[in-house]
Amino acid sequence: MTNNEYTDISNKETDVSPANIEQLKSVSMIWFVPFVALLIGAWMIYYQWSNEGPVITIAFDSAEGMEIGKTKIKSYNVDIGEVSNIVLNENADGVIVTARMTKNAEKLLNKNSDFWLVSPEISHTGISGLSTLISGVYIEFYPSSIHEEEVDELTSEFIALKDPPVTPPGAPGLHLTLNSNDQFAYSKGDPIIYKGLTVGQFEHIHFNFEERVVYYNAFIKAPYHQLVTTNTKFWDVSGLRMDLTADGLSIQTGNIETMLTNGVTFDVPKGMENGEEITERSYFDIYANYKEADDERYKYSVEYIVLVSNTIRGLSVGAPVEYRGVLIGHVKSINLLAQRNSDRPQIFDEDIKIPILISLQPGRVGLPDNEMGVSLMKQQHQLWIKDGLRASLKTGSLLTGSLFIDFQHYSDLNNEEENTQRTDFENSQYGEYTIIPSVDDEFSQITAKASQFIDNLIALPLEKISGNTNELITEFTQTAKSFQSVSDNLSGVLDGVNQQQLTQELRTTLQSYTKLSKDLSAGSKGYEDLRQTLSALTKVMNELQPLLNQLKHQPNGLIFESGKVDAIEPKKYTPNKKAG
Image (cartoon, rainbow, N blue to C red; front, top):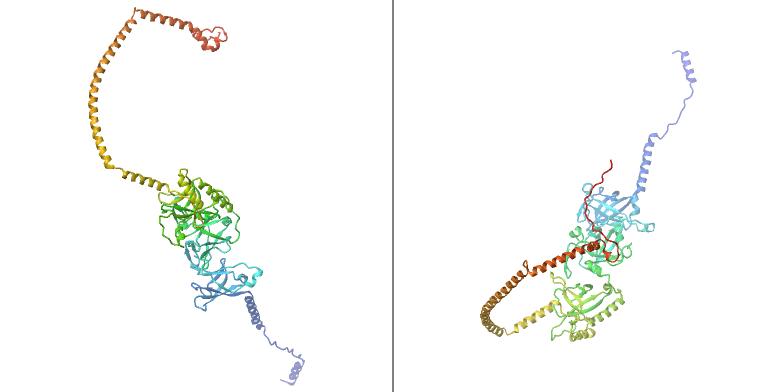
């Protein structure tokens, strides 16, 4: 390189403009990616936290079929939670299930909410939970409705129901409480019947140890709950019931379902007003049958004692008391003898009568069912008893031998018996009860008469009568033989007399006939007289012919003159011929 070239190059380098120096960025754009991801993650965490439902615990007797992270909590078949943990409780006699609920279910978790485990179940009411055979068991949640003023009652601890409720949640209808101190055994799900239709069922059974009464929570679905009124009565229709009473054989049942299990029915007894409709939970008694339910309507009664001298086998408590076939009451007790003599035992010199306590209801005979009706019934019975009203045992059924008490008026009582029983009624008391006079039943009277007849028959001197009878028969035989001999002789005499008399009468008759024939023969005087008489009679009839003909056509011709009516003579009919 020459100096000139070097000089040119130096000049070129001297002419170049200075470089633009810029400072490099310290943070790269690539770092915004994780930052944005962090923000998204934080937002997701916040969203999850803000929308996450509460955690609750549910106490179960067993965790059979449940799995952590799989068993769902459902309400109306919608998932609202999931089981997150299962542990034993402190006493190791059950399990505590922890579950996470959804946010929208938080406001429904109050103390009245119910949880129960849904699994396949077969019972007399049907088959349920079949869907769990594929999906597995789940926990059903029944949310109880709450109001704003009840928000403080929200809770996170629950005790699961041992069995699912019988009535579907939210079903319209009426909840009732039925109670009974009798030996009725109903189970959850047993039906409530109305005229053969299943309209409800038992939900829960509770036994009160203090009262010793069983209470049943029952539900009647709509619209049948409108049938329950203040006068409604419930009675048992379990299985097939056969009763042999004084009225005969009766068979009672509800429907096919109650024949396999227990059940009750209800209605308003005949003759009662329907009453007011029940709109809230009420209490009702369960009666053994319709008869007891119907009797409950009568609040007032009059009690009497009937003393019976005959056997009371076949008479039971509840047997009817009738007046001429009309039911007026029932037998209340037949074992008062021991109660009366329990305070002071004694020995009786003669036989005693069995006391029967009867209860008569004024309302059954049209009297007011109140104190006034009781007073009127007492006055009426006092009057009737003085006039011969008596009580007696009668057989209601020859098949069963059941007895009932019948009131009848007896007008054939003798004066001594009537005065005695009237005095007994007016003055005699059996404890606090008034005694009604009684008479023996018809069978006892017949038996007594038959026994008296047999006794009189046995008392007859049969040997003496037999000897006299033999002698009488012997004498009668001899008399009969003598009478036969006399009869034979008399027959011979009569035969001879009859033959002579018959011959004479026949001869006289023939002579009279011969004379009559001679008198009526041709040429005789009698014959000529008879012929003349017949000719005269014929002439008279010919003369009367016009008169009879006139009366035939004009009956009033003898009173009113109408001219002569010529006899109509038949003529030959000749048809008219047309001219030309």
